[in-house]
Length: 115
Length: 116
Image (cartoon, rainbow over all chains, first blue to last red; front, top):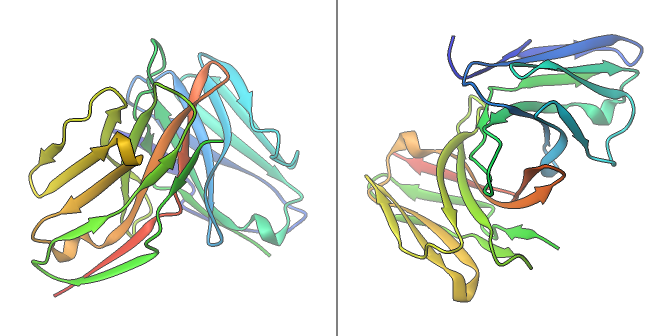
């Protein structure tokens, strides 16, 4: 496989469920990102892992918990979500290093519906 | 604060027309980077271009061209002879240092519909 892959592509879960989103990048990058895209808001950065350091967006509720076991894999663990958490969750990766930001490459996203 | 404005929510053109998507940004940084991404109906954002603030030369790639005007804080994107496959949502983004990495500040996107 090439690029950035995400599984599952679609997920429906109840508010009491626990689920995880998975992202894998095959580009040799060392930074990975989670974004949320909803109908009402532009792309919102949720979490960044760069050189295995987590840089957290403080506005993300604790019901979202990221995990980055290595530079190629990124997870987003979900628990006790709310209906307003329904959105497209996008994973991205990029090189990190030097003085300039590199372009990010995105996966196809997981369409999450919370019922 | 960093901000990216894409004032055009939706644009509809007929195939073969030229179309320009506007992007205006705000930043206090002297060095920054601008990006354009395309999001087709499949959902995946596709990287189109990265431009740094020191390079004001316009760029052309096939039917795509970009006009960077630092004086007006704009980074507009033109598609020449549009095609139905160009139908997508286009996002302009601005880089911002974030911890030991960077984050991208995205505009709200412009939905382009190219009709046959």
